[in-house]
Amino acid sequence: MTNDVWAEVLSTLKGALGKSNYSNWIEPLEFAQLEDGVATFHVPTNFIGNYVSQNFGDQILYQLNKSGHEARRLSFRVPSKARKTAQVKPTVKVTKSDDDKGAQLDSRFTFDTFVVGKPNELAHAAARRVAEGGPVSFNPLFLYGGVGLGKTHLMHAIAHELKLRSPELNVLYLSAEQFMYRFITALRERKMMDFKQLFRSVDVLMVDDVQFIAGKDSTQEEFFHTFNTLVDGQKQIIISADRAPGEIKDLEERIKSRLQCGLVVDLHPTDYELRLGILQSKVEVYAAQYPELVIADGVLEFLAHRISTNVRVLEGALTRLFAFASLVGREITLELTQDCLSDVLKASDRKVTVEEIQRKVSEHYNIRLSDMIGPKRLRTYARPRQIAMYLAKQMTSRSLPEIGRRFGGRDHTTVMHGVKRIEELMAKDSQISDDLELLRRALQE
Image 1 (cartoon, helix red, strand yellow):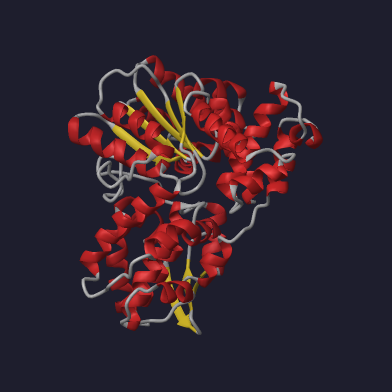
Image 2 (cartoon, rainbow, N blue to C red):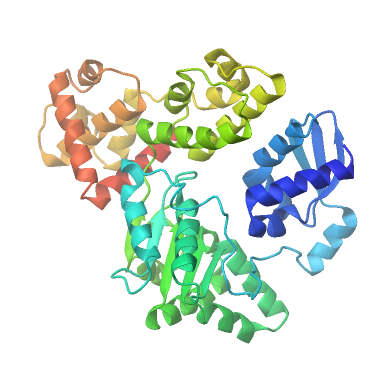
């Protein structure tokens, strides 16, 4: 592959990933070689290589293959000279706008492209309310959930809407790791006053993946003071993380307390209807790019059923599927889907058993397994029993009568009642929702 081809790929990536992601993470890459299906790049630091691999690897592979060059995986290497330089002065770039204050955003992540369903409707409504501008009754807005559930999409959507409605506002969006690198750079270059002025003069501060600063004492200290200054000045703060504030290990208690004083909203794992809606929305976009491709009935439904834990994996699978079908010039059938995505489907085939669910739930609520399965109706046992029934219905292919038999020979109507009760409680009891999310994650590990 020539450098001219890589330049064309870079141009496409810039449009697909947005100006900020491109300048921070893609621009530092230096193409080295493509050999035996491995595309090798030189990077200034290992950190950049790891970040690009995890967040943009699939997109780069897709664009390389689309350009006619077979690439199965990426390799990132730090040249010896760059490694020595990196030890003296980090070269990681941070998010900047033209005036160093405005937010750099992905144009794809708007409210119009966010597919709303029951698992994310509260988070969407809260994000919409903040995006309307003006005073709100909750500050900060804290969005949390697992990977690929839409936190970053909502963050970008809020910023887009705020800038559209009130272009005079100073809206700064960045990740927690970028906050940390700006802080480190300001310390090293003795520009802390500039750092403080930048962050404490914004109207809206948006920090993604705040769990990144946990355990980093100096960064937490500065974040705490920045947070207090903005809240005292009635400036809006929007934060995201992969878990609730109280569950972020090594995050200072005073920061946890501040984060919990606003509205804390969980983005639940997607259900089948939402996953299908996301796929249908993506197909509409791909249809314009690949007008010659035909997708057979049942393919989207198959994917929505089989890939259930991560929207990014789901979207990535569809991207790969369309790219592959375009390259080989074939209709997207169920057979082609199974062949093309065999590794993704296999990884999604983690089988959870009813017995495993029962053990996890018993351990979580610190009760004996025999009491949860047994006849006792005390609430101490009944609620965990209903939660276990709900998870068994959601995470296994067992029928209601089969589930009932594993819960001490109970009737299927008892299981139905338990499932319905948990669904009702999830809508009004955040503790139930938090418990379910923790249990799901533990069972999917």
